[in-house]
Every structure is written in C-alpha cells, then in structure tokens.
Image 1 (tube, rainbow, N blue to C red):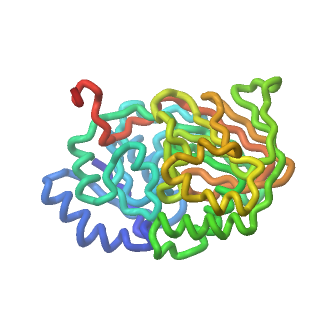
Image 2 (image 1 turned 30 degrees about the vertical axis):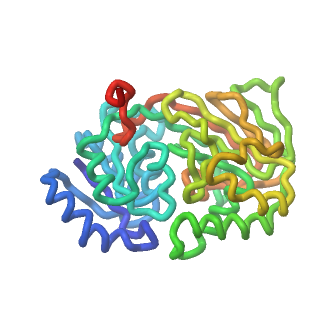
Length: 319
C-alpha cells in the first residue's frame, strides 16, 4: 500500500492527524505501507503516476476531495487517458474539509472507519470524467474528475470558499460561500448539448450546470440523488431562471435532494458526453477545485475505469 498524504488538507490539520492518529491506527492494524507527503499543487498526481509505473498496485489518498482528484488523475496516462495499470486499486482516508466523494462510496468520514474500508471494503469499478476547458490563465486545459463538475454559480462558490480558511468545516464553509455567491450571482444564457446531438440542444438561462458522477458536492449538498457512479453515464442537473431570493429561500432543499421537485431545476436524460456553451464566461470547478473560466466546456465519461475501495455492500452480501 502506497499512501499519499496532503499535509495541508483539512485546513492544515492533516499533518498533525497523520502523526498522532492515522499512522498509529495503520500500525495497530498491522497494515504494511509506504507513505509520502505532497509538497504542492498537482504533486499528488506526479507521485501517483510514478508509483504505479514502479509497480505499486494500491494507492491511498489522505486528504479531501482535492487530494482524491489529484491522486485519481495520476492513475491515467496524460496523453490518452487510459489507465496506467487497470488493476491498480484506489483508496482514501478522509481528512479533508468537504469530503463529498466518500459519501457516494459510503466510506466513513471518521479516520478509523475509512482505514477499515481499506482492509475490508469491496472493489467498485467507478466511472471517471474528462473535462476540457480554458484554465484560469486563459490556456487550454484538460483534467479528470471523479465526483462532480459544475459551472456557473457552483464554480463561483468554490472560488469564494477556497479563498477562506474553512475553519467552520465543510458544510458551513460551503453554506456561507453559497449565500455570498448567490448575492453576487448573474445568470448566463447557456446551450447544453448531450451526446453530440446538436438538434436536441437544450437552451436555458443558467444559474448552474452540474455534470455528476457522484451524488454530493458543496460539503454535503445532495445535488444529484439519482447518480450511479458505476453506470457509465453522467447525470446532468441544471438550475435555471432562479432569482437570488428564490435561491436563498430554497438552499436547504439541496441537502436532501428535494430541490429536484422545483420548476427551476431540471434533471436531464443520462448521457456519456456533454458540451456547454454560455454567452458569458463562467467558472468551472472539478471535485471542489476551481480550475477554469470560460464559455465553452466539454465533458466525456470513461466508464468503470477506477478501482475504488468502497463501503457499499454487494447485493448478495445484504441478503
């Protein structure tokens, strides 16, 4: 087991957690491992890619959603996005702020529980998304995501949250960021094209567009209750024509999924590729990390391409 630790995750608390709790629990459970600390942005991707090429077959990320994203990117060849080793396993030990990825996979947030999944969890072949975008410097960008990509209001909220210390934890940090984002939000006329069917393009005045593999984002908001991370399809959720007051008044509904009943929210047909074109530049975030700003974004799914250690029981085990 090769463990990649982001010491700055969890508002900088992960380094201390590793020393005082995580390492002690791993040793007590007699788990054999090698560990390394990341030293900056995208270092986890480099470490993962090199470790897999050197023969490691179980990579574990310690941190939050941003760390999971970086490590997952390292599982794939950057030229053709095929898995470097299709048999290599991906595990996580939760020590981040938002930690939304683990909710769909039913991995406990508490450290001992997530370590237990590394030992006893089952392997689930999860989908991964490819995003093509314009990065924050105006250059073409391409990156993978394992949970949710969103444009518009969601990207703006992430921008605001990631500029804070997140001392209030994931749920409250994202809630406050959402309220502030809504107060300054402007809609953008957008065209949504699914599975390259231009003739069936959907046009709307977008508050937010979410391309979902997992169910949760924003520190526990259940944006896509019907997502299945193993079915080879994106769930697309759009929020449109919402006034600031409407968004503020109904923000609580996103936590239990009841927002899907609102007329301003649309759950689209499942698809394997998506393109969005907006009149105005909007922010893009992938797995809670802001990566770009532009008018055109493209997304494509890589089905069942990441072997994730999860806490979900197989149907045969439940009976």
